[in-house]
Length: 334
Ligand code: UFG
Image 1 (cartoon, rainbow, N blue to C red):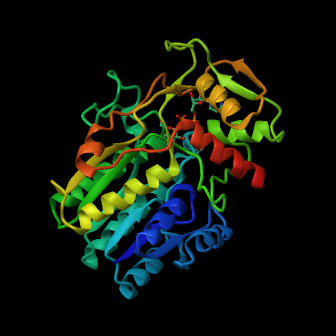
Image 2: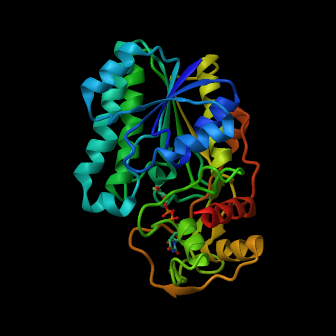
Image 3: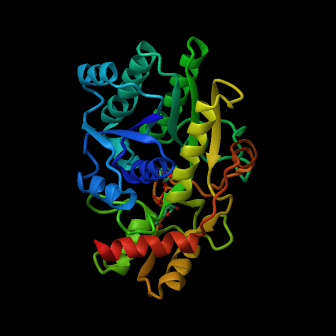
């Protein structure tokens, strides 16, 4: 079985390619290298002893996408390729709508034209905003998006769902909580460009002395220690969810043409919990200070993963400490 992975050299994409190849799938990657480097391919080859096919294509280039589909027989598509910086999306909304929505439409058009009907879509818990009830189930209402990035995930799900209603497309949207960590081999990991916006790369760069001090954004939230709570999921656990979801589509075990699953650990950790776990897991002292809240942040988000556990037979296996250990090893290697 041949699987197309768009954005296959990115953070979650590369870990998913490794798991796919370990499971015996043939993989073809499309990536434009806008937020990754070709070295990631070497990491994948070193881990799996297998070279995935690679095409440097920008999905906005409609004719190249069309040519690719004409000359490749694909059994399933896992679509990661997208821009993902929340803050940047506020300043450059059109870039986000073009990169994340136009490309999805081209991809769906080509899949339809070439009768390719299995799609896994990279979605996000951001579609829930600040949910009224915790843990968050898939039934929680979709609230107005806080950012153009979040909106592209909501719209992406809707575009796919509308397409399933008028075609043979079968799709699964995986709504990720906060993916962190890296592969055990330390050959692939997260590669933020510039000053990290996300917590874990900022933590590891602070421990490495690249950043002077970690800012904890807000300690006056309505949470046990006042700092915001998230569900941090190891990227390898997350990658495995994609393989299970793809097998579900390939074996036609899906219950409807469009399904949604939360992918998280089910456990909430505050920013201070993360700092403490990092210090304990790696025997490091972290320099941090409390700063005002970051605009646009929600207070608490953690997943109810019952549906993924029962329907997909998937559950997270690695702990927050495992994630923070692998993130630190990766940072040291950089
Ligand atoms: N945080 C800090 N200091 C930092 C960075 C982050 O205290 O330097 C805090 C944030 O305020 C937040 C928590 O750490 O409370 C996690 O922040 P991240 O930026 O790591 O993650 P977010 O939850 O804000 O964002 C993630 C993904 C997005 C997704 C969003 C959905 O990065 O892609 O979840 O809520 F849209």
